[in-house]
Length: 253
Image (tube, rainbow, N blue to C red; front, side, top):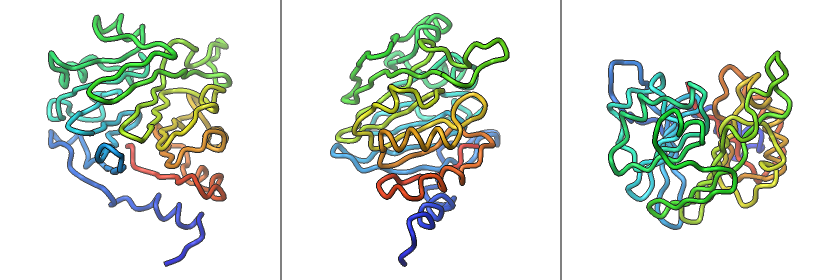
């Protein structure tokens, strides 16, 4: 079946049943999680879409939890973490209770300075820092607001408070942006295979901002995440003409 690119992108976006799997069973708060698989030179990368800004990566026997938050899942039932990655200190991304539920004495926790101070442990990563754990490479990149601000005039996410991360799985580079706008450092990224870009107004990006960033660094697969009530079909429309960027919409609760 041959469809125009825009129609194909929308069809992909609407395949809600594709990749659905039960990642946990609990008291009923945790839904059936959607999952996608990305093929890499070192084996399959499984992406679990937990909710909001919360993800889990499974790769070569390693479980990586990104911003685990108890309101999105019962973490007592989730796989134990080899790595926990925290983008910033806001309560919808940083939850010591969820961290405690999945960490073990061997878990590596990579996080910001503010989160480390609150948690009392973990390895601080600042812009430009690199860390390799279990053959997976993590690079911290800037995440901040330029446009969207509080009534006081302060940005919702000041520079230096939060991180995005570029994670290398085999030959694939995955960008988890955290809470940010389409800042110059994002637009200057290279060779990104998979990107998770936030679209939760008014705190992060509009669909137009996400489209602007995607056109600049051209991820092969783009997942808007942390999008709340923002209309994801607008992003699909804006990028319909970009043949080398596949927009994938997955339910994030």
